[in-house]
Image (cartoon, rainbow, N blue to C red; front, side):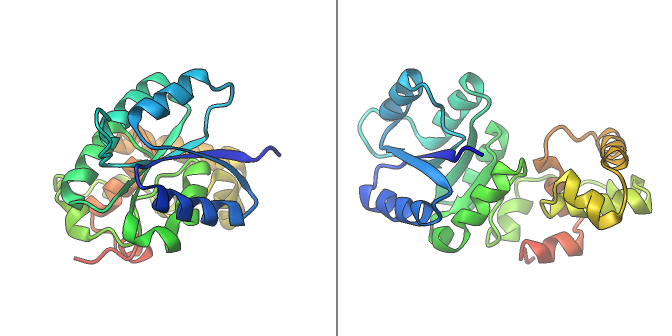
Length: 224
């Protein structure tokens, strides 16, 4: 299996060096770095190998550079196969809201980078979304409008599967855990999507938070 390719776009070269050290220590990924929107888009336009993930600083200070959320919006439109994890040390409420609107795949506060970086990368590469285990309940809750419980529409089996999806399990892992076929998992997953109007994987976590599902809140260490 070929190694996944990760790009970081951050204007702090020392921070990039630290991230590079963490990533390369695993010997699982290839790595490159850019330091502004101009450098990133030049790289994307010229490379014959697009990155699988971009780790993207939310506030780039280099003159003339777009900020991370503006970059993310363009990348998602022009290069939809690229996953994006937003890195930020700024106000979570505002950044998280905009990041979810843009459609990024992960959100990781810089202060947790050492502990969570590889978990976040692995989660996103597995097709799941990552919101950060230490992201405060208030930061997420303020983004999402409270609604009547939606998961009440699910059967017991569908609810069990819903919880496993929220925790980042793949269809194969769910099938093994529930001792059912992949086809059965896919059927239940389709039913859940239809019942809850789910469009992307992040919607599972959003609904779980909206419904204040304790098991999911505890898994992500989200506290009220």
